[in-house]
Image (tube, rainbow, N blue to C red; front, side, top):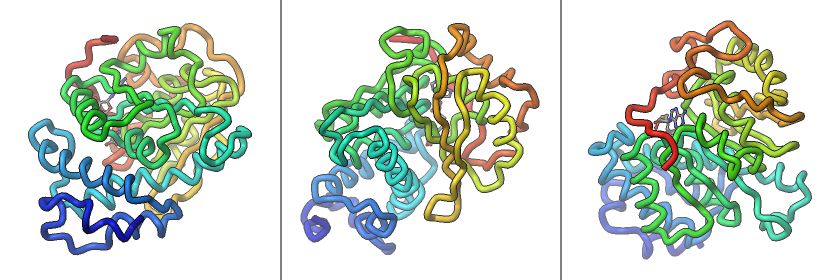
Length: 287
Ligand code: SAH
């Protein structure tokens, strides 16, 4: 429970903390965390701060900022995932059926690894094109001794044509990877019929949303929501897979972002800085 925080936190993580604890921030966001989860976040935070700058994982070096801008940002998505889980006829602990979640372009684990810690019953696959980041993800998984989570060093374009992954997931997420049309092309092929994708985005997304709405039917999906998240600083774009995705999608590596489906390329400058499309630097395909 939150009361055990002081005893579970490594020394280096307690130093110079001034903001509210992650436990209280998460509770306020409607996602209470137990002692094990808080201990997991403590280890994760330490690894991130220790290796973040070296591996170019994050520019954030302040532990409070890690909590607020990385952990809490991802935890805010949990109520939407819980609502989906209830809709899918699974009990709140995921007992009836273990939901399969794929996170595309996880980077240092956002949001996929945070969601795995918050909802350990989910079976989570993290897809990351950059080798050093995929290695970091695996190191965190090992340090936390998590099961039901895999980090794959690959591009989503390749994973989505692998029959072990195509149409195999209930849920897909991606944060700060690409504009909506490319995200749809990369993620919807991985979803089973009736599955949902959740993409956190900035506030000003009218143009990107329009492009996403044009692209969605081409891959067998529809955009159903772009609700404000509790912080008031971002929106959660929610997509439902409504039909089969034609086998030609996603197109080969790099094309979904360069030639977005539905036309009308969204300029980089039009997306929130944190959500600007990023090119992987050493993508090598499936391992
Ligand atoms: N989601 C993380 C990282 C964002 S940076 C966060 O919110 O912090 C975007 C990441 O997506 C990079 O690590 C990049 O290597 C990865 N990426 C970009 N295109 C990809 C693709 N097609 N397949 C897999 N990973 C991709």
